[in-house]
Image (cartoon, rainbow, N blue to C red; front, side, top):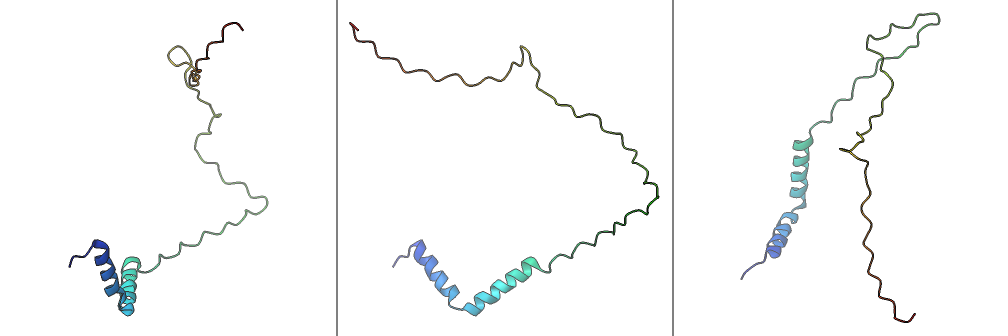
Length: 101
């Protein structure tokens, strides 16, 4: 008696699912092993208290001030001409006109 692969898979599934308590216990063990405890929550953000009226603002950072935004375009010229569209589709040949018309 020969069995096909699908018959073997079905027989295996029948054996496994025959004991639902065992399936539940195995699943719970896999989940517990894989995930463990949830991550700790992040620490709270520090409070942001507005400065009292009349208090000078904090000193500015020593970073250089960014300059104006510059748009960079590709070079234009004989080596790099403008982008072209694809060539037009070739037209179908027109049938010859009937003589005498």
